[in-house]
Image 1: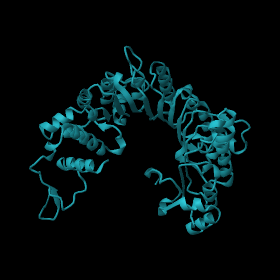
Image 2: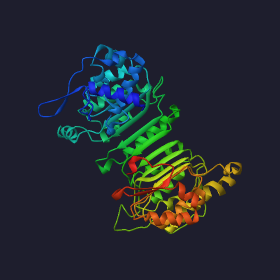
Image 3: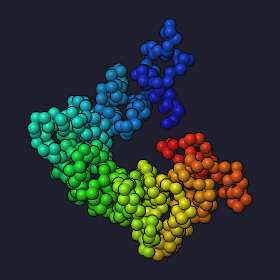
Image 4: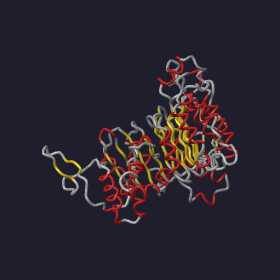
Length: 482
């Protein structure tokens, strides 16, 4: 954010008593007898000097800068939060807030929020496309009350729950379904039934603007693991009438009865972020279906024996090598195991070639020299052999991996050295390698200088103590890595 906007936004927070880092030198602070700093109302509203258009921008920056990370990027429909707070300061601020529909167009709805507040939010958002997040997981006490009254089976909506805040919110949101652009739902068995009744494709428009859906399924009863598959069926059948919907984020527990990893919807999506605790073999099966995808993230990868430790069944990938490769020509970004990995993810890559790949990141477990060989073979195959086979030879020189990130707490110094010296990675814009193993940086750098002096000059090293070490070039990775 530009510095002048930062200053103005902080001024807005001060007026609303939301600035958490006051300094004693500020004019608007006074000191109590105890030495404690407190806010005193300032006599002049300096925002009166600002044009409405500037004030609108400040409100937008302010609102999004106060969002709790758990509800980002949506604003909680709550009287104590941004937009409603801004509308209560003065008539001018109220006019500015009500005249900025963007303030009201990203909405987070919790299970305890009053429907009247949600209705107000929707009215003030005007005709803008909506970004929505709904926490549709019922409190166990609500379900217990319904069960005590000997109502219907859990897979059928309880009459008592039909009047709940969650169901009222869904009904209100469905009246504006033609404005939905990005939606995120956390669902359990009860709210999933209501989701399946949404008029996504009902005439005249349905959810015509819908581009992106995120679903988190909370299953409390193993007998109802078929619900996730039904939701995927529902979304796939809706795609025929929703031309822009091609991005899906999905989180659910694995099911032995219904294999959602093989659902046909994955072949139709361009962006897929999925967390279902796949094994390596399941990951290969899943990825092989994503033939239209340009962006895929498999968040959690487990070893094949993790679900049944007593079996200790190794992955078939560890004992066999690929004789034929699966080519995904559209894939540009791939992330594997960044939410947790208990295996060697390079074993997954050995089955594939991605000639359009530009960004690769994965979390590994004890990267070995064999892992390095598999990774180098994969890169060579993707950007040379397969590109030539697909008649992309004229573009081969410009095709290369631009961003590579490997997080492995046990990656040794010799593996790190081999990676930074890999010829096919020299043209990469960024290389990020993370380990918690000891790194003798002076010796590492001297070794590199003797063989690759130019590379040694551009290499960066950061030691984060117990959080690990980072080696690479092109800038530090995101803060979420540490």
